[in-house]
Image (tube, rainbow, N blue to C red; front, side, top):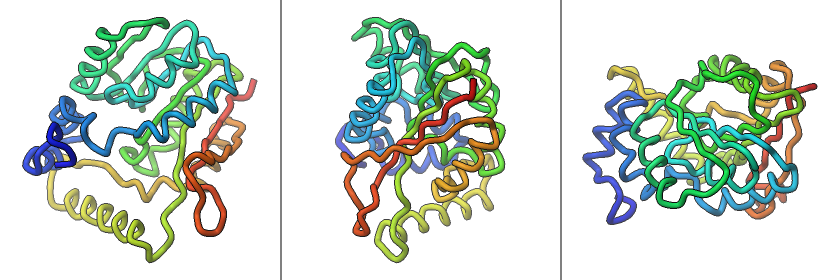
Length: 243
């Protein structure tokens, strides 16, 4: 599906009936040939925005997968870049690709759960791309607290977030159908596979970040276009750990 080098329908079905960790281990060799990888059309404007916010010394790509965000951090961090993910398979693909194009800064690949990060406050920047649907709303406080704990004072937690599709639009119904299918799957099958992107709402996320101790700014990403009402299709959330 998606591309000749991408996963087959059967492979995607096997992944969907696995746990999140094992499912991504299975998908890892073909992940970059699917639409699940953050596209360059999103990575490029985020990179430019971070260059304007920087410079940064050390950065962490949270739930890094095969390393799309690691590539962004390599452009804006001068000393150290770390990718962390729960899937050993995804990390292996990212590590192998980095060996073929090794340049400064140094890159570390760490297998860990984002809800229990094995770091102290050593990062100036944390980014994440497309991973938040894998966390239930009640897990957000703990997740954001973990990010807060690994940032130095003044450090930033940055991620893009898309505007919700207009109710009644094809994208709205597609997202609702996907969310419903995942909930039915998890009601009938174990282990669960958490992927509920409709639950990650900007107003709720912003409020939770503030409760965690972040100062939150929103930056439009005009490169992603405008909605019919003139509002941006995508924004960059910039959450700064108070000094």
